[in-house]
Image 1: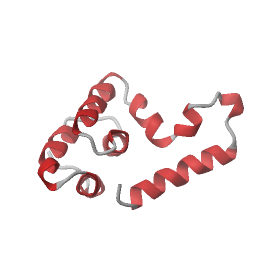
Image 2: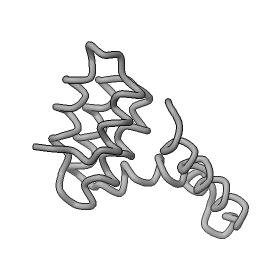
Image 3: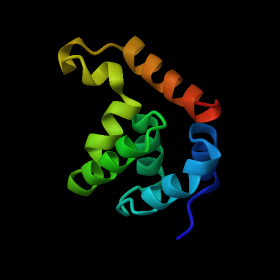
Image 4: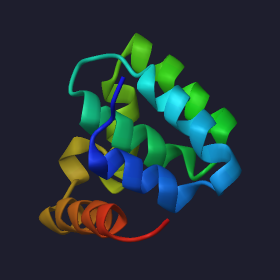
Length: 104
């Protein structure tokens, strides 16, 4: 199975060369719903740790939104909906876009 270029790039950025094949194999087992988006969220949540990456796959198999929320909306996830502000939404989006474009 082939992953999108952005997913492959993030794997290369986040994992040492000797762990990249294992990270790729793990990411390829991701369920199909919004696959690239979920794969990226799994990588972000793993923070470059293979065991955490495998845990993210198991979590996505149950409910992929449990992988997306902490990756894309961490501030909003820690706050009640009534207390969520536009600034939080902006910061979450900015941080995620920075992560996508940078090396982590």
